Amino acid sequence: MQLMRDFILQAKKTKDILDAIEFALSADGGSNSRLRRLRRADRIVASAKSKVMQKSLVVAQIEGSRHLAETLEAARDRGLSNPVLPLDGISYWIQSLLMGRLV
Image 1 (cartoon, rainbow, N blue to C red):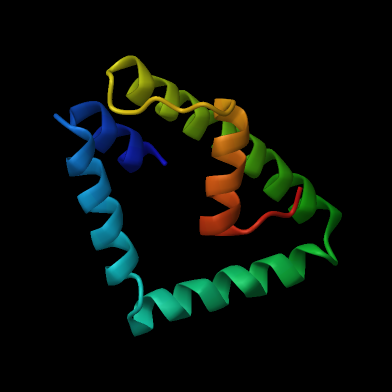
Image 2 (image 1 turned 45 degrees about the vertical axis):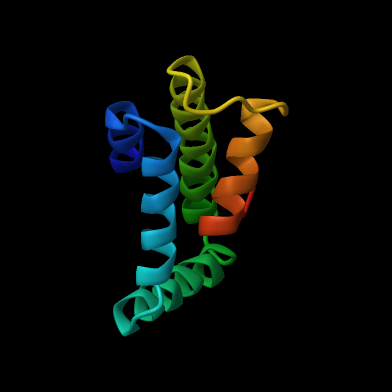
């Protein structure tokens, strides 16, 4: 999340951000990415059996959504985007697509 924020805050134009998103999505198809997704799925399944892990993941997702909403707000303030929906909702949706949701 911090890497994404740093990139957005340094981007000069919206196309730079869109090109980076396209690159990241196309680069995410390799075996390392697949292994990372499998590990994430293992953690999600394990969290169903651990109250401590559930709480930790819930807190992490809430904080991640808040951080992403602040990043989107910075992009909007810099004129890089002009969302018509609430930033919290957009953040929640993006994080759901990229990470999955447990909350």
